[in-house]
Image 1 (cartoon, rainbow, N blue to C red):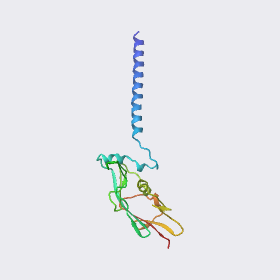
Image 2 (image 1 turned 180 degrees about the vertical axis):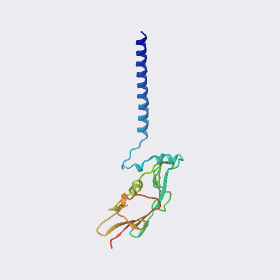
Image 3 (image 1 turned 180 degrees about the horizontal axis):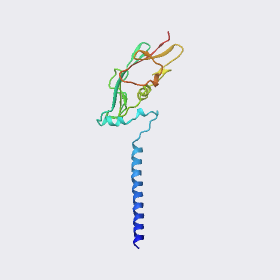
Image 4 (image 1 turned 90 degrees about the vertical axis):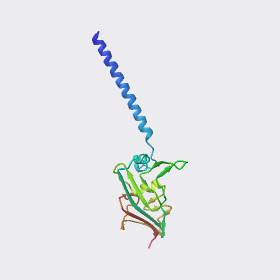
Length: 178
């Protein structure tokens, strides 16, 4: 009789343990999936963990700046203030993208909690504007127009795939062909 009671106690303990693990796993799974936002464009930079931490005053591990200048047919284009800030109807910031601006100077801020590669195209995705080797904003390359791009004065042809680096100067120039 003693052996049978020990087996029953062991089975009850195992069953309770499995139920507990199942419940805890379910709670964890439901919480992690409900906190994830879908990224319609498909890059991790649009919705990364720094966006949530920054609003809670937590400093990012990786923070650097670069300068972006866009010229269309000889006229400098203003890069808007607060690219990357998602606000509610009251103007309160709900979300901060890891690539953003604070003013219209063309100074771009990149802030992440981990060392991750950021591409120039991510900024344009966040901004909601087009940029590729064939288009900048609403201007398309055609028989008469080209897009030239330089980084620190050196010609580059990586366009939206250009890797953002600290303290670089990126110039994008849409102009009439020579």
